Length: 199
Image (cartoon, rainbow, N blue to C red; front, side, top):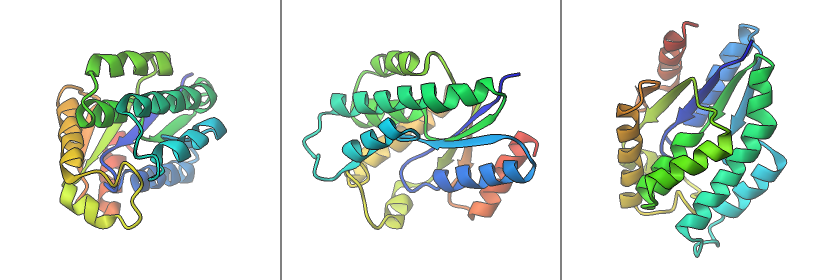
C-alpha cells in the first residue's frame, strides 16, 4: 500500500512550515507513520544546496541557476526521502514541493513555466502531491514577520507579490490545492487542515 504526500506551500513567512509541523505532530499522536521533509533540503546534499541558494552574499546568482539548484535539491529529496517513504506506506508531510518552483522561479523570476514543469517532472519522476495546502498571506504581513531575511526573502515586495499571485493562480487551476487563510491563528488553520484530511 502506498502512502500519501501532503504538501504545504506559500510565500516566505506565511506559516506553512508551522502547519507542516503541527500536522506531523497530529499524525504521530494518531500513530500514523509519518515522515517530515522540507525544500530546499531534506537530505545531506539538498541541505548543502539550501545553504548555497539562500545565502545573501550570492546575490549574483542567475534565475536559471537558482531554478536548477532547487531542482537538484528536489530530485535528491524525492529519491532519498519521499519516494521510499511512500513505497513503505508512510505519510509524507513536506514544506514546499513542485509548486514552489513554479511560483518563485516561474512567476517570480519570469522563467518559462513549461520549462519549470518539465524539470519538476524529471526531478520527481512524476511524483505529485496528493493534497497541497496553500497557506495564503498578504505580502505585507509576511514580510513584517521576518527578522533575518535570506537572499530570496530579501527580494522586493513586488517580487513577493508576483510569487503570491502565482501561487493563487496555480491553485485555481489545480483541484488538489486547498487555499487556507494564513492570517488566522496557527491552531485554527491546523484544525481546518485536519478537517480537510478527515482527522
